[in-house]
Length: 378
Image 1 (tube, rainbow, N blue to C red):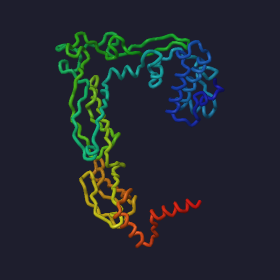
Image 2 (cartoon, rainbow, N blue to C red):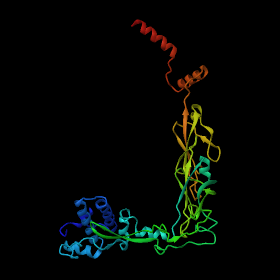
Image 3 (cartoon, rainbow, N blue to C red):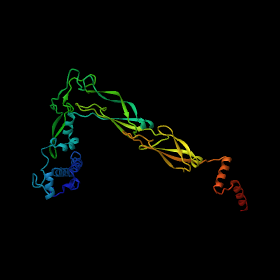
Image 4 (cartoon, rainbow, N blue to C red):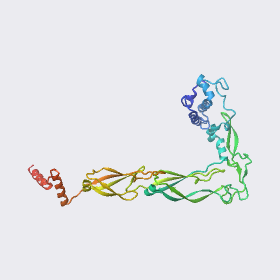
């Protein structure tokens, strides 16, 4: 093994960081672990190589020596570690969590379970109208969550009693187990099966929560949604999640914002876009029109000769920026409506306008008659 490239074994570059080394090792260790590859001698050898490479590259002094001389002088002529006998993974920090799934739990998870833990977070979807999202609104929502049992004050024990220290794990919530494998003897730390990792035993359970320390309740919560929120925004409500464990803080409630689309207004960030339809005559002569905004209709003077597709801006008529005094703008796109049908008076007036403008106007009826004559000669 001494002649093999440890970096190649882990599939990393020579200048890899400590985090990259650890990540590569975890991936390879899980891939070649004997429990996942029973009776596979090749996988067993690979597992040994991966572990040996990690032991060298994860130690700054050993790694430096290996980078300089291409070898290390540890416990044996072959530069290896002489097998895995006697390893106690409970004392190897982050290394132990890799083996949790193979040896029935880990030291770190058991240790965390016995200490204060933050409660689980909750999610809730709130649907708003376009106007509610623009100006903000107070909503009262109803959620179902666990609440600390008032009868036992969250201990889970009958009133007047208290949980006692587990006699199997001594209150640590974990027990050491030695297992013999083809690679040697492993000592792993598992969750105590008597207390479930809490380190406490409840002899007489609370009749109200049945020893859980919490009960399921429906709770009304008022949520102040600020002006300017958009579809997909998430509003955190601190401390309104599930209650903590072993004195830990409560989790948080995350409110997911959903906004219904509006028939007239189209949102683009803090700006609003709308289409304003005007007649051909107003576009030519100019006119004062009413433009709808989220604050109500406003008057706007469309200048004469305005072309279809022209966009004008109403400053400050857009959407408020969240937690800010600023607002976006409203952009109005002018659409000139061309009439599809004209009565005789309208047609005569338009023809007169075209003639005055120097355009040649052909009589459709005469043209149609001449076309028929020409067609008859053919």
